Length: 440
Image 1 (cartoon, rainbow, N blue to C red):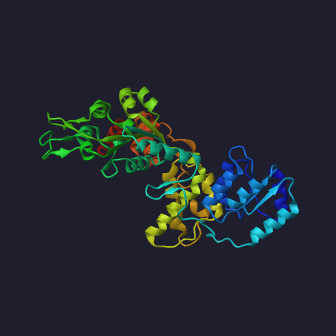
Image 2: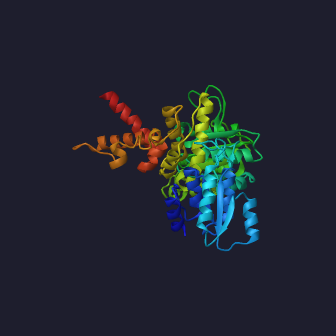
Image 3: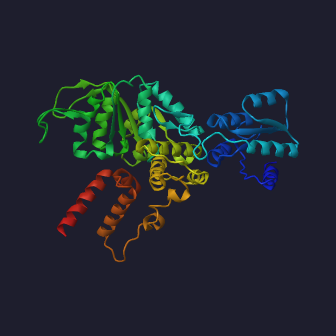
């Protein structure tokens, strides 16, 4: 039936896209932006009524024609009330269908011609949790469940998926919302300073400690401490964090006095927690205490329906920031964005949109402005890292680490993850390379 309709409508001069499921239809509608949607009432993953409601929720002007082999008066009335422009039964009257489509397409569409919605529905304006996909709906549900509790949370997701945003949203939805949210990247703190940063220190505790300093745990008292890249925390420090999770006891470096600290711990990692334990990066007892409430953040490739919404939101931010104007994305650009693989997830999408906006300025953003392959032309991305003939083992190590660091935008934690090393090892190697360069 779908193929027959496509052939008929193409013969009538319409530009046609087809979808076999409601999920695929939502994704295509967000990028293709059709004048009219013709939908069956029965689909493998949803009902036509469900699709009708979601399409019109995203765009109240969306024109939808419902078709079914099992037409009843009640069903037809429900469809028309929900916003369908007509309800047709099989076998279709193609003469009536063509007349209906011609009339629908002849009427002007009152929405924005390029970017239909700069502030789309299903977007949490306060937290920035954008999207209406199944994956995002599930994520919101998990966030709400975590916010109702005071137990530790472990957030797991690829780099660039927005794990800190998820942590902030949990905090803002919880009873601690009026208190501090203290974020810290465990991989960014030098191992020698990690305990002092986390637990604080007294005056004279070590060279340079000229006055007492409250640690991050104290600063987050009655609030939330977000520990990003938890698998990069020094193993020697992990038992002390475990004690905080167990009984809330904190002791500054250089002090014998203990204090009770009321803090909620939310941790995050882009690694598999189980693999981190197996490799000795994360203590299994600490994982058990952190992994009370798990939130898995989906990669952008798992929620492609949300890409037009996110891209439009990021473009609106650019426009608001610069006080400029831009007509928005062309349909071809949105479709290209939707089909991209997004290894860098939402962070990569934001960067692409900002770059495209800077290039296009007041012109509609088209495929040529996206430059989705920029930065992927070097040999390290396409063919791996190429080593010169006769290179020494020491120089090979230097090249591999520096090229991987370059490919990760100087992210030491991600470089360590890709190379299967500790962040501490990466830091030490970089110091060594610097000294070797000075000697030369």
